[in-house]
Length: 198
Image (cartoon, rainbow, N blue to C red; front, side, top):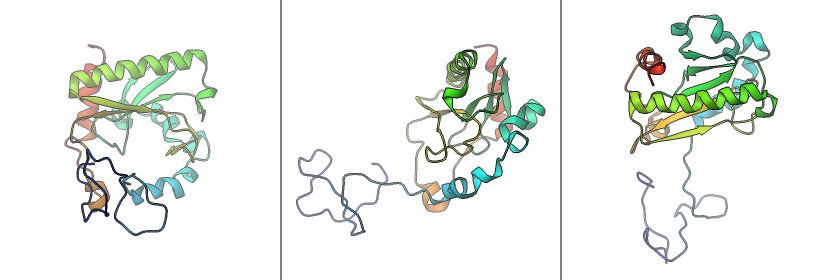
């Protein structure tokens, strides 16, 4: 992995094209394996306290967002059964969430109509992001439940994260800093402005 810490190789280990078992050279508790881990302790805020902030529909940010203006809530599009909103704490610029209006926690809770619109909005969001930001890839996914990594497990949402070569670095881990080269308001305006033209 680029940027991973380097140090003396364990005896018998080889390079990237090596034929020997690759293990790390840190003598920490646990069984050595070939995985390099990215430690993200700042995510504990979501794990420990984030879920308790959403107790019902009145305290849910995804339920409250449609009640405000698009600019205030960072909404880029409102559909019939679901809407598209910028993530307030994005992994990358243009990180979007597709949310049903209904306050339901699981993918198995949405109707056939909601499922179809969430899928269609996700596809369209990718097309819009390709036009406005020219990413070379995407991460899409729904984290289900607190153990599945959902920041707000009570209200289903699909992540659409645009990716570029070299967009991952160690700033968030080392300096608790994520470089986002555009304001949320500017990104929302670009995406919302292009939504109906793509």
